[in-house]
Image (tube, rainbow, N blue to C red; front, side, top):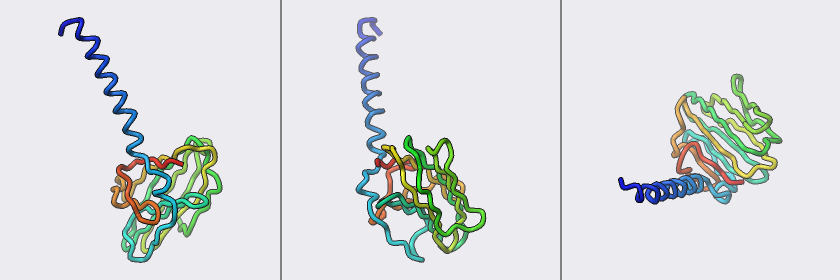
Amino acid sequence: MHKSLFKPTLAALFAAGALLVALVPAASAAAPSKVDGAPTITASSPTGYYIWRDDGFHLRTHGPGAQHDFDAVLRTRGVFENVDVVKLEDGDSVDVVKGGHELRIHFRTFDATDGVNFTIRDGEKLRLNLRLDDKPAATNEIFLGPKGRHPKHNPFTIKL
């Protein structure tokens, strides 16, 4: 390549790459309104994660039938507070680690619903990495807000 064309071409490639990096996080973040309000979870609801927000955040795992293992790591630059567990059994755990910036969840759920409620102080985003039965949860196994919308990706981010 001719030396005089190299610098403009390289600059254009860097600019395109920077634009792509800038757009990707915005496309993978769920708007707060999509998670506002509780879903309806019944005995016949599909296996998966149910996540919503009202006065705080709520995460439920629902696993009708055989046992399912749910493992999740939630992260924020803020601090997890007011962590309260719901219907946990032996072997289930919820731990706040890394100075309050990370919430780790392990639930064994079968024919029931397990969960955790929490608030986040001074955070702008909540990053969720959800696993179901030792593999990343499929997006159609993640239900957000009252309409049960699915994120585009897993892991994904919710703006606070």
